Length: 177
Image (cartoon, rainbow, N blue to C red; front, side, top):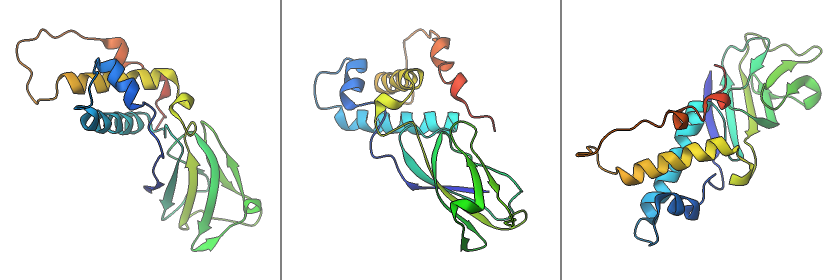
């Protein structure tokens, strides 16, 4: 199975202003670094949870598909295209279960078990950060602040404290693999 992003998100779940507020930054010198930290935090959250936070398009290719295909990036909002061995299918040829348990099943005479299946689909909570669950954006803000505060690879002279609740903010959102 191969997974590739066709269309990246058009926005980030956390705005630059939100990141600056979290980091207590009131100037523009850190804007570029904070913008990179926002993207890195989103990508890390998406990788850790298996979810697309902001609407984006994906292609999932299975060179030897099973009878039922479980899409890997959640929540799935639309199936855009299904191709079996290079032939486009119509929505009448398959059943799609969307949302947080997305599956794709062949209908009628269509059989794809053991054949190459390409599925293009749209996933994400919506077009803006307001659509993303609050615990995920809260986790991102903590990661951004941590990256801003400790931008070097070595931090000297501080005592380590653990905010375990931050680490567990993503737990309910992790897609079962």
